[in-house]
Length: 268
Image 1 (cartoon, rainbow, N blue to C red):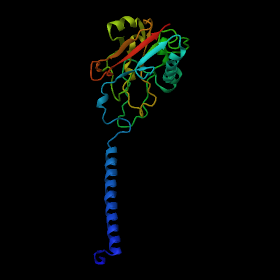
Image 2: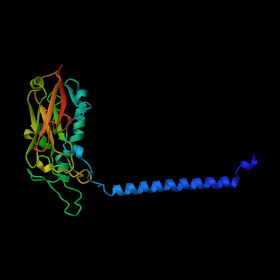
Image 3: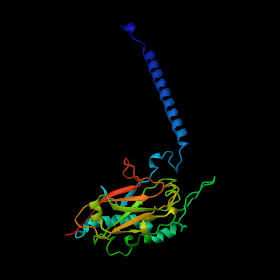
């Protein structure tokens, strides 16, 4: 039996060779992985996504932000709408006129605010002012009705999602329109007013250059104030952006250029 056993030094030599082999092998793999990642990162911009084909059409969203896109207001129950008011106060704070005047430019309306690099990195990009006062009766400034939530005339804010280097409107005017999704919704929705007037969105807020470039960018908003909804009835509302280069009829994407939400004002 003793003749079939390898000497201790031969076993140690074999183990050392195996360990050396795996050390070199995994070291080589690590080096190859690191080199591959480095080469790949050289092709990626810190400021602009390399691929953004899924974001070719911007979507719309509402504020106050709710879990299921439903805004429910019980006039007699302050707690039911105070959460919406607090969210809107925080959301609209960057739009205060004083902050906008300090950080952003007063731009010429009706034209894109282009800031090309021209071979030299133009950073940071300047943004155009969107002042809170442009939201009129939905600005919440000195408003004892708390965006209309305490009186059953709530304001809902529509915003377009940001898409880098997207020229919304294709150099033509654009606006947001809202309506009840069905005939009964249209009847129960009643009248509403929009701020800015007619739900207009100006070209000067485009293009958007990205979070790192456009550090003080505040996207334009459209506020919708519902004046005389039928109380105690859930109303389905849909808002769309009317722009030459934004499709709103893609059934595969319910948020492409539009947003649907539920609105209910309870009165006891």
